[in-house]
Image (cartoon, rainbow, N blue to C red; front, side, top):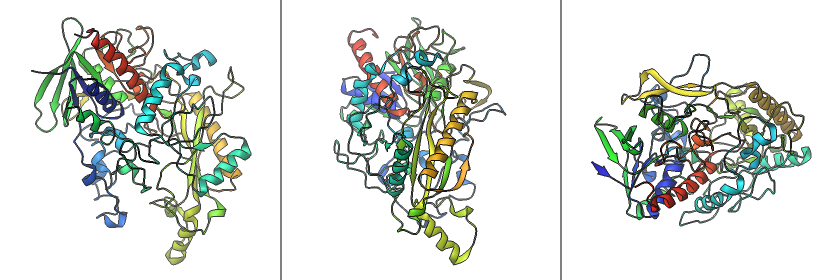
Amino acid sequence: MESFDAVIVGSGACGGWACMQLAEAGFKVLLLEAGAEIDPNREFHHRWPYQLPFRGAGQPGFLRKYYPGATEFNYRIMIDDRENPYTTPPDQPFRWIRSRILGGRTLHWSRASDRMSDLEFKAASRDGYGDNWPISYADIAPYYDRVERFIGVSAAPAYLPQFPDGAFLPPMPLNCAETIFQSACAKLKLPSTPRRVAQLTRMLNRRPPCHYCGNCVNGCDVGAMFNTIAVTLPPALKTGNVTLRCDSVVSHVLMNDENRASGLRYIERFTNRILEVRAPIVILAGSALENTRLLLNSRPGGLANSGGVLGHYLMDQIGGAGVTGFLPPLKGTAIRNDDGKLGGLYIPNFSNLGARPGAASFIRGFSMSASGGAAAFPAFAPHLPGFGSQYKKDVKRLYPSHSRVWLSGGEMLARKENFVELDPQVRDKWGIPVLKIHCAHCDNDRAIYSAFYDRATELFRAAGGEIFDSKPSMSVPGSLIHEVGTSRMGADPKTSVLNSFCQTHDIPNLFVFGGGCFVSTGDKHPTLTMMALTARGCDYLIDRARKREFA
């Protein structure tokens, strides 16, 4: 049986970083990825919809097996839902949007890279709800620095304590619509700043800057946006210490008689051959829910679950379409490449910022985003009245002025009754039990969305906009693709799965990197925090390994 110093499950944001850091420290690493390897030069392209056989929509019926949103541009990097099902109660829908591909969701993520602050890490001390994280901003700040400097985050300093600044590249410029919204924010005394994105505005580590092609969610062919295959995997492979195996579906963490993790069992995706590998260090670095699924499947009652909280405290963030319409000053102007950067104007949280929460009808907070202009698909066009040449003229006239204010992230409260478990009846293509996901919003979540909707409407009107469509309701949980929790960190093994270094309390040589460790969601996008926690956890792991604590 093969042996390595460490074995890592998953090649996304956290798995790629852990692989690089351990390989550069001299560890012989096996990186297992359930999906296929991908060649950006061949798979990622800049073709227009009219150049594709089915105008981007795909052959009728073909894309149904992929998660909603798959197109002819990107279906190769999306998951096949028929091979990888999950279940929910009939009255609790949840959208679990996944990728199984080398690089995972880093190939098509939004790239929003925000630091959390002690407003999130110590929220329970302020409003009395839930639990504090076992870390403070001071503990993680050096790792935010390290990750930002390596992956490249374009942003402008905001000088706001609730939205910490970092080590930034120059920000992406605001377009015309975003500048109008920025002026409206100033009028309403709302904070605003260019959206912080892991997308280069100048050369970094031999990666070229963004050329504003607008194909980010279809995969970046030049590596200007952060993703595993362009940024962390190349230096990892350069060490000669990494063995990469794609199409390897992990089913179990293996254990020895000393209650230590001894390796992994995995299934070859196309042959169904079952293989095992040994390693004194086992790292789960898939998505939050896939990591938890693996722990639940590895032992009756769940592995590393002495406290009984594994699978509980599932959170997404509160999202919703918000308000869309037209900005009159931009009607009839030239059609520009407004969606080339996929950034926007960001409005950081402005609620409940005092030493104690104020008079708001909810606790915690939310952030908003605003953008507009011409995009690859004029989504508003099917809803306009008319037909023929005049209809086409109306679409072109309104195109540059089409704009939107949306909920970038609202804090969904951590509640034990939101949880995942193994479905006793449904299995995936490889015979592994799938997750049954139980998740619903609470009254505080709904109050946050209501407050957002009121402020979004106010902002749109302050910008002089004409509201065309508005949706005063939240999206289904999971829709924001920020699912976190289910293997939370904490100081007490009775109430948490992991310690502050993402090491399981019960099994010292088993680490779980990713969003599962989150104690609360905050209003920030989670990926940067996940990567900073991974870097911190790897420092701790490497130090302990050199002291032979895992031997």
